[in-house]
Length: 185
Figure 1 (spheres, rainbow, N blue to C red):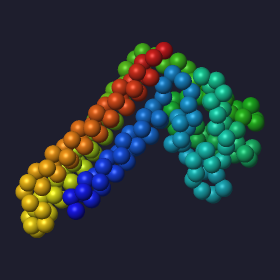
Figure 2: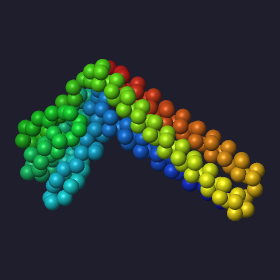
Figure 3: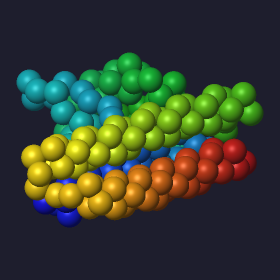
Figure 4: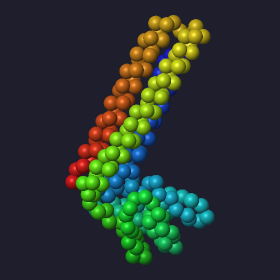
């Protein structure tokens, strides 16, 4: 039972780190990345869908993104969706392809992005700690139901704490990597 609780906690912690990685991929750095466009949705064919399902996305240069819709009738809707997004980028449309130049980040904007990164990391750490608390509560429940001894609970809680510390270090490592990426010119 206790091994299952710890394994489940680790699975959820892996998922929390994956969410953090995805969040980081949406933070703009000085380089163009199609990951910037992942969260953008648009109206097409009577449904709301991600732009990656109606167009091919590319980053042919370090400071340029291109979007080529498979159906040219979606060009204006695609452009509107990009303008409505919170990217703060201005697309240019030549009728066949949309180009989005990525301007270099100002030092002030870089610092704001680092703050955002730190906030996301802290939220991730809170989620990891909540998972630790859940696992510890489940272990205490097992002890109360007399399924495991107090010594086993103590050892399992040490294991839970060690795993939590490892995952928090991984989150800090991801954050440091992203901050370095943001601050590099």
